[in-house]
Image 1 (tube, rainbow, N blue to C red):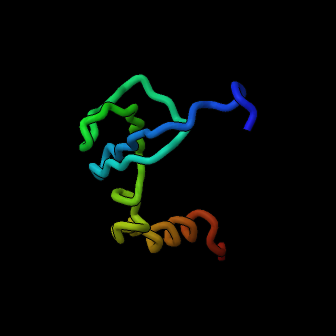
Image 2 (image 1 turned 60 degrees about the horizontal axis):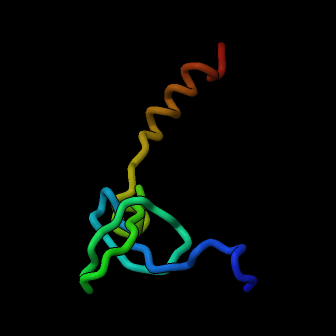
Amino acid sequence: MKHGIHPAYRPVVFRDKVGGLTFLTRSTASSAQTVEWQDGRSYPVVDVETSSASHPFYTGNARILDTAGRVEAFNRRYGKRA
């Protein structure tokens, strides 16, 4: 890699706001906030909205849509007319 043209690749903590999951990985993401990790060092922290701890696909808590109500509303609006 050429020096001076790439963003810094360093350890960063990602924190899920909803699920409470935190994990340390390497990234180019930057943040002004820091958090003290389990090893006693301070790392930048990036808050994320969704991770494997809160995403419905991984948790199994998928939302059920009211498809019957939608079909009835469609038929009321655009159904066959006599």
